[in-house]
View 1 (cartoon, rainbow, N blue to C red):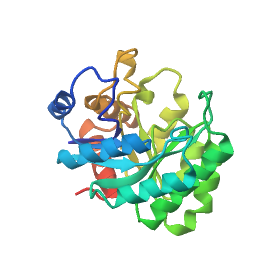
View 2 (view 1 turned 90 degrees about the vertical axis):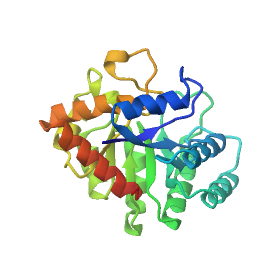
View 3 (view 1 turned 60 degrees about the vertical axis):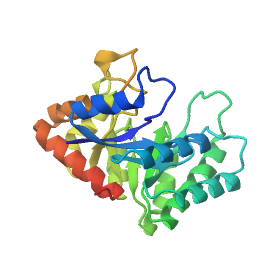
Length: 259
């Protein structure tokens, strides 16, 4: 049995309806899903989807460059209100640091303020946090270390950094999540993390509809392809598919308190 620990189930980029997406995933033994909120609008969609479908859970959060015109206070209030509305919310996020050429994106100091607001919200509500990290190892680590004494927990999603960085976040009690990035060429740093990480500290995900496996580059990604991620992890770690799928399933359920 598999869980897609990070996907966007309702998205305009999909070419097939949600019912078919879930059906095809289940045919590939993917039986649970966490659909991710990244903005005020997507948070509502994620909650509605999770409330309608038994084996779908959700997170709510504000991505580093989303809802830029809304104040941090207003964003916090929106997240707090949403937490009262759904019992299927299992995490805060996707939030974090994105240092890229995002057009009209938030400045780094504003990203840090937004990220820290969501860290505080996760602590207040005893929820794990789902972290987006693009070229922000230094900034992410600094904030996690700052809040490490508060029993903060969570995952670095779509991990794309080094074993050195991975060890630091693991030492802070965090998990890392592998996506189809590990099937791409020139990903030796991430493959080193896959090889070395303990079996009880990783998750698997698709980030669908983004990041399809290497064999399907240029096409849409779907939750069913979390099987491909799992197969690659098993290959790199020299474990069986069953061992890796069992470990990732149990790790995900433990982190997000999913029964």
